[in-house]
Image (cartoon, rainbow, N blue to C red; front, side, top):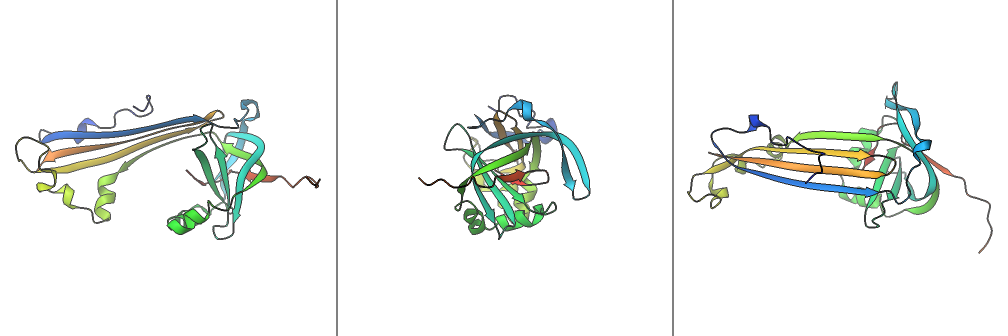
Length: 222
């Protein structure tokens, strides 16, 4: 169940007289921030869609201690914000450059780089500006699979033998994934669903400088 976040995953246009099986997989996540944002501190601020184009959007603010790291390799700030369930957290990779999203995404495709960016956190005092956001996506996984040379399941074969009582050859005609993520002052709510249609055929120091993480341009999160 996705608690109403995702509906109409399987559109009627995906079904035909040849459709025999529809497989649906759904996941749902919801949790509060361990350190919640005060809604009274949320205000409209400029978000840079491009270095030259902005849009005013509701932006949350808080000052707190978080796990933080500055990566020279990624040229980015990395912030970890925990949820109340301690085994989950929201991680933000914010490129230093307002147009640095594509570069950081490409670098994070390397598993070693991705892991390296998450093992050097130190506890720091941070001022965080984070947009309230709702993200929705729908991805045709069939096209992506074919591009990755995963093609056998899309043509009639014995791959799915045994699903039906008769031995009519089956093949996958659609694989669609929808996802929705809500990030607000209280926490994060996320859901994803995949539908598959199968068809016939102690010292006192001066206070440290407070770090500012201002997510006012495109960033990566997980």
